[in-house]
Length: 144
Ligand code: ZN
Image (cartoon, rainbow, N blue to C red; front, top):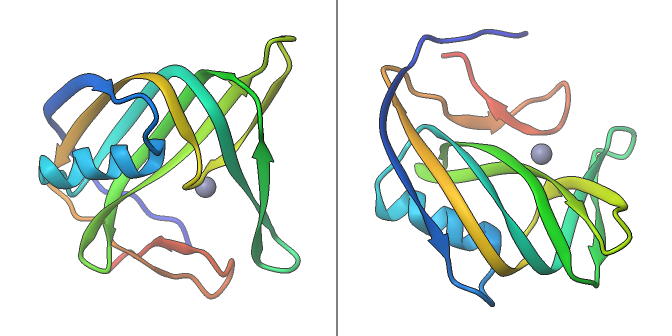
């Protein structure tokens, strides 16, 4: 069942991430450091390699796809919410290689930054917490 909540835009932070670090972990650290429990994130830049997920709707398990070449982050969009009391980032990326070919998916640990500029915005006025959704097998937002 779908639902929505009203939220207000609050603080924003903008910056760059260190080269050679894990993209998902660095974004998560920024959210935790700034105590952002609900928010949105976007980024662009370049990667040394990527590890992407694809959720197999039949088996209800993630399949992982490793991309072992330099890539451009042409788009990263995601959200920040609480799971087990900690802010976590759910982000999807579109990446391109030197031939201009695009790939993309669910951003996973194992994606290494070459350079990255990010924007993160805190949202207030509501809480969104993840819990297991029986219909999809995914950790989705709960209405409560
Ligand atoms: Zn995803």
